[in-house]
Image (cartoon, rainbow, N blue to C red; front, side, top):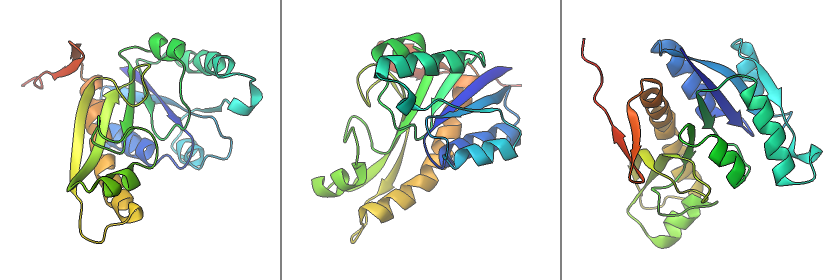
Length: 205
């Protein structure tokens, strides 16, 4: 039984998707905690309602990123995580923190990486005139929005799309993509090889 710790900063809709899939599909795992850097994050209410322990580590309480990450790491490690999942956690993490969780820290980014790292990805996609947009689940490395890609979801860019319409349409795909990727990790089907990810076939009964 693997322990999953999920980090959020807001409503945590991708966190909800992972929690629901874990229960519905009976993964050999449990969501051990949901942690936020904001006490008013709406996702904390969902976690509490589902009996999941929660914690708040506010970045405003620490003078530096290093100090915040050290405190956050201490709280996370109190839940003995096999996997740490970033689900709308709006903090840039230090290299020391990322290295501590190397190979067991996942993020979802709303673009087809390596295209459009950073913020405002939907506007970036529209400004670039691409015909296809999407989301990427990847292992986190010290380089922002890089790291070995686990899986991607793709949507067409339609005439008249705005950043809001793209974001809404993509979010429903993210809610399928992220649980799929997390389940692959839980089932020990992911291996990082030469900066890429190899997915093993599911065990056949």
